[in-house]
Length: 323
Image (tube, rainbow, N blue to C red; front, side, top):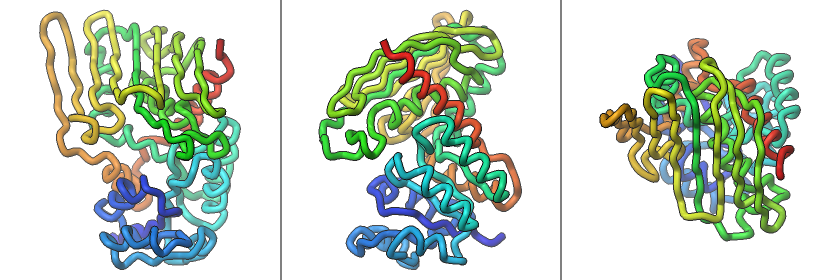
């Protein structure tokens, strides 16, 4: 099977630390090219992937006939534009989350995907981790009975006002940056959608830095209460709990598995706690291996543009229902 030649669009620090390395290590994938006008930024990528072609700009990469797929880790406000350009250039594309700033923008991406017949999706890495697949299975099987409540916390402290996550013009803020996890993880695991949400939001320099969401969602076992806190001004914390009438599931290191702690699924019933551990699992590598499987064998990718649209619609609802 021929490897999938993947180009990385932009020499971001995140791509350097995580995703470009994951492409390089994923079975069936080849980190083939990098688009950046900075030779200095290209050097650390070439240190672990010396054979990559460095293109001086994004258009040059899209014109490269040897590149089959592109991965886009650009700032949030550029995602839709370059996803569309990649599809029009005949490239399959995987774009970082959030793939858009509003749900209707994703309709445009879905139309372009369907028109071109190419693959396009959002790089929502947690659904590729067996931790989250296991949580979904446990809820499906009724392990904790009917789901009654979900609460999510995702926070870290990022006071640097010049960081793109703190700049409104680049789509910054805790809602697009980490709300996509807090909201999307509940949707994915519980197969649920929001019914009614209310949000309280604090802002600095034009971006939200603290958002509390409360309300109800509905899934196969009916409605359940939902509470989520995201912040880029609090001490780092990540935890998700799914509470049913027969027990609860606690998810540790749910979003940055292996980086903030060991990924675990803890099933609590009565005085018994069963712990399932996932040491050493690299979700970014799995993400690109799943991309290869989709492109080469047609197996379904775990996260579609329609899935991404559902989470973005929930983000839009959070913003619309601020009190």
